[in-house]
Length: 365
Image 1 (cartoon, rainbow, N blue to C red):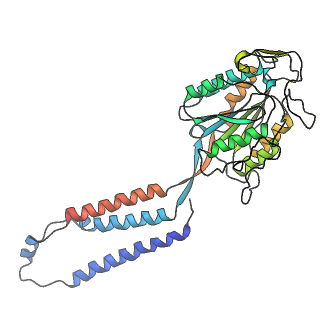
Image 2: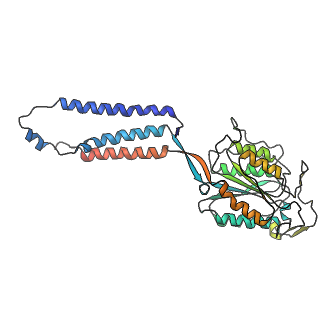
Image 3: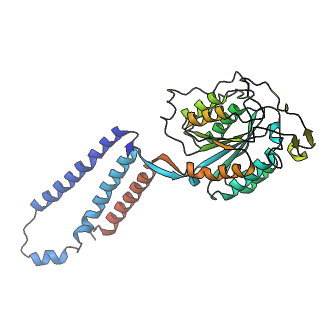
């Protein structure tokens, strides 16, 4: 256990001082005993009260002060949180290369099927968010437990040109910051994270990757290509690492992509068929193919953030990768503050003290 404001513990010194004063008052009362001729008469006239009733109001008040003093110091304990109690951001690549038919029926169709199964198998209290990215990234569904909303959004995904993996990571961080106040947003207000000149929000005292305590929220990034524009994945990964957010990249598709065929729904209205291999859009540096998952970069993202990289060349392996994910992030460590609970207990004890004093005190008639 630790304390955010340890100096506030000095307030606890009031408790033993008040206890000592109470005991001194009791002893002083005994010394001021008045002699009476009939002790039996005094015993008959004195109200019968057990000793613990006489001392309960004061004991409850002292305990309340102790609880409130501890609450002021903001005690914090580290607890293990299962993945079902955290949130998962699914960042899905919807670039044109996801129409490649090397995975039946095409990459996007297989990914949608696997993601629907993943959503369905999570516990009801697990919040899941959805980020879609091609040439830019956007939050399609904020983290929610509404499985119908998520499934409908997955079914409605449409493709675009380009692959902005770095922007997808930053947008996922922004989605997490909406539900976790301790996580600052990734991109400065007014900055477009998909542009090459975009700069992530600076963090005061950036932490060394791996040194920052892990946040309970995670990002699962599924892509079949390489970054073609915007912030680089490594830069975005360092922003995530500074916030304790782990990214679990999944490189999807074979190394020999075939003809690309998009359904009308995946294109938003028109069927597209391209036997060539150049459909992706956007410039690309480093010589990586936009139709093949950039495994070295994805492994680097996982290494920087403390996540795990998965490779899936077909639908079955993708199902296995998503199904294996909970075992890799089953337990999360998180600091929980106890101030509210101690403050509530202190209020209850004050109420008990007042009630006991009124209930068992004797008043002259």
